Image (cartoon, rainbow, N blue to C red; front, side, top):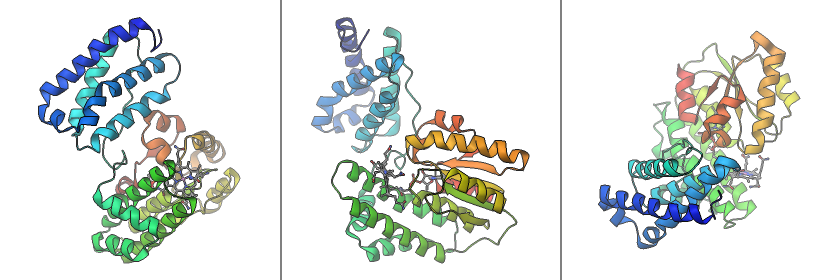
Length: 328
Ligand code: B12
């Protein structure tokens, strides 16, 4: 059966109406609060997820995640609580499963940062980054930083700069900003983060070392730097390789520095396979002498199956989690 078959369509419509009715009666205020366009599109949105769930069972699994994420973002940015959205999705999945051969709904990360939903402060910071307003961006960042609390650096970085850069990416994707603006936003972020780093009190230096690198092909270094800084302020000796390293370069750096941990950053889906190969080659070449391997980055933060496929020892979602690991 395909999503355009008449039996699918006629069996689907009453199920979607049931999901909407349940939602409206279990959470009347949330339903009433949805602005009229979102409310009138609601059945169509559920229908789109159902189409993708059906397709995912036989051919294309990737669109289901994208469609669900879009739905979650749309409702979250209109202020709907996570548990309400979860209950809508659960009800939809159960009803579809009872009638059709669909793929199970994928697990997704639920917090607003990971779903890239900008709040007013994020939007303000995004504007400053795009306008090249270093002073305003720095002032806001340093104002939120609590220099005597080392945890404050990863926390402020993840809560203030990271979502603003995600919003920059979303605007680039929508063709609303130029490539040059994306570069300026990165440069200002890097400057602000390094200013913050110099202000924060560091833990005493320990006999632990970590090497950080972007996987071959990944040119996104800001997230990796945030993670490396989180280790550094926890007292680790840290080396962060510049972007543009080949697999051979990274293997050589491991041989040269012999770090306790290696942190690898993976941003885009096409960097997952080179990352998997790199991890495999590190295991083969260094055997028991190898560093522990930590992975993270946008490409894996929303897909647990990728984490498992990489063969790494640990995964952290962001610099806050990485700082907690560094303090273990
Ligand atoms: C700035 C930027 C660039 C800059 C990067 C400059 C630089 N020196 O770093 C430049 C211009 C080079 C660039 C290039 C490209 N980019 Co770009 N870029 C971005 C942007 C806007 C911000 C990246 C960033 O710094 N984010 C902020 C950091 C803090 O977040 P993060 O990387 O997720 O890191 C956190 C966690 O993921 C985790 N983490 C990350 N690494 C690691 C490592 C370890 C060990 C651990 C534990 C954790 C961890 O912790 C970090 C801190 O909390 C993103 C948007 C986005 N959503 O990120 C797009 C984005 C990543 N880029 C994108 C694209 C398409 C590209 C290009 C193909 C085209 C282009 N825009 O020019 C090229 C490809 C380059 C390549 N081969 O890698 C897409 C990717 C979409 C996709 N799924 O494929 C995005 C998502 C934009 C979008 N919405 O379309 N980009």
